[in-house]
Length: 184
View 1 (cartoon, one colour):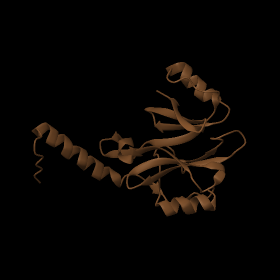
View 2 (cartoon, rainbow, N blue to C red):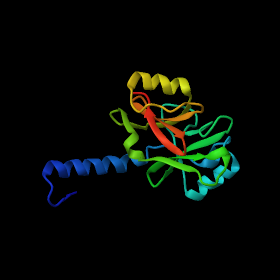
View 3 (cartoon, rainbow, N blue to C red):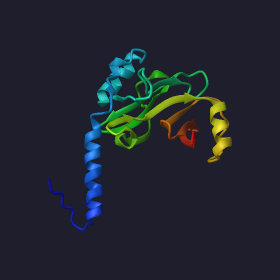
């Protein structure tokens, strides 16, 4: 196979071909669940995820289904759902306020291929994971790593991790999502 990229050096052409090959080869290695496979998800949320064409990529370090969480992400006492929704190789965290399928928040869209890690010579794993975190976690990570000063913390945030590499915390405050320091 011959790849020609006009205006590119041989090294750039090889790097581009290698990135294309890696991205194409790793797509099939991401385990994905149908929203209907997550029994605890409310039926209306499952239906909305299916309408959007979502699958839920599974971070490989955890043996049980993952990347579907619930927590108090807007305010204390309100139970919200967050799902990592992948469509055409891009995953976005969708937050369903109070379990309603109407107007979910969409945060942190990222290409799935960015979160592929080589574990062995011929083994690659998907490594993006979300989980709910509380005030202690948020403040401990701010104290350890600095970053933007957190607002008053009275509900949970979403830890968005590149597993075993680092993370950021998404915290909803005054109608906006703040990006706070996570694990380093």
